[in-house]
Image (cartoon, rainbow, N blue to C red; front, top):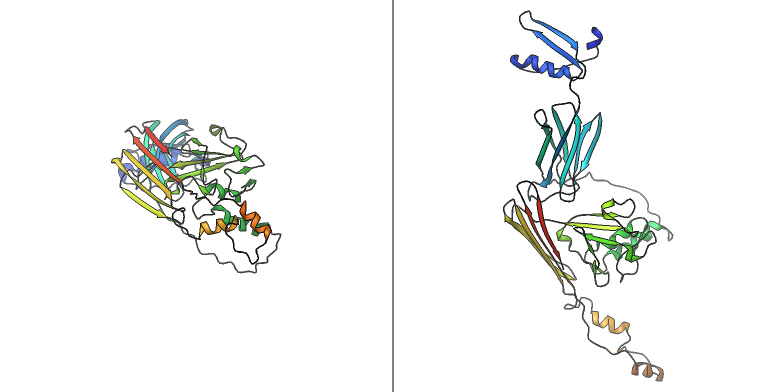
Length: 375
């Protein structure tokens, strides 16, 4: 009947030998069958129904950096199913497993990760319903937005909470180095205590209720110099996550929230090294392959020199603050008595260091063996 093909438009571009087969594949999407009699040059259209039921297909593998071979945790894998976009996220080791129900012979999947170029891959499932150990390589890509110019008048108010929070931004890193823990205080319900204090106060909880994880291991001392500096070297960190509201069950998070860090596995393709110098410490990182494409190493260290170089006459400021050998315009008996029982001027020092090490091995089946060290 005419209603069978009403409002259906099919476009086919094919060679003569495969014309009828391509046309049949296009019509099958609309549950229309095609039977061709080449001798009489006749074609019969009929309602075929959903002859092929939906079957479950399992596609699993891992997402890696195309240049270094490093796994990309929490990357996104998406596809269309029943007219809607659905998907999964890769694990902390970059592995994924997607279960898809479809009646088609081909399934397109889109792989994406922040800072990388998205990649679409079409999987042929006509001969197999389970595809394993699929390696997806994403290339890094720089994204730049258009320039935004805002013209207006800024009105200052002493009670403005926005300006108040901006003033507190200077406490993120009192000595110039990175401090990711202190930076979290810009989030709602997250407060930082005094500068010389470890941890955060989340939703009114005490600072000891705040937990930091490094590659799944709890850190009980996550800072240097009583919270002034972060205990983790930013050169070795791949990604991080902060959970203080709805927390995944695998973290078994305390009331004070969980801050988790994942370190890099090292470059599987090339040897690389870097060095950094701040006003408090010197850092160096070395990474490269042990066996090309199969195993890698990463070592990073940082050591302070704040006690070796007096940037701002540190000892003089401390002595002045403790009222040691301070010059007075007048000298009275009271001042002399105070100086007699004054605090003794002793010599002290302060320094810190941290070391990161990681060995990564990967088998041909995609299994991983990781040895991580932090001191």
